[in-house]
Amino acid sequence: MHRIFSTSFASVYPHYVTKVEKKGRTRAELDQVIAWLTGFDAAALQAHLDAGTTFEEFFDRARLNPAADLITGVVCGVRVEEIEDPLMQRIRYLDKLVDELARGKAMDKVLRG
Image (cartoon, rainbow, N blue to C red):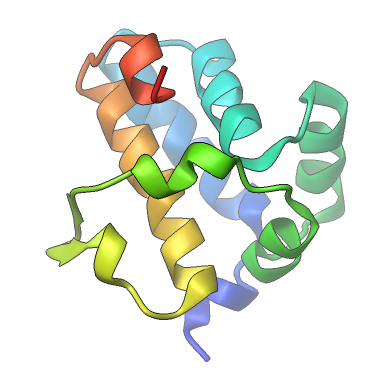
């Protein structure tokens, strides 16, 4: 089991916020991306942050967007569409979306609209 699976989502979330805000994007945009991928509204997201939910629990409870398989590309040198472990793939989907948001990609493109 990879260490990230048991890491709390709340411990990584501030790094996502910092990454997107450094590039001129907002926490609200980040939350919109997370909601699109997971189905969590603002209250559910905050509940996971408050509870210290692990990445494994976070994605077990998520309703992954049916269009998530449209997320392609490289994160940490690995193509996300080729990752075999379903949980790791979901985590990398989120990483890819955060990267795209931080790079200034239009929101409709980030959300595969």
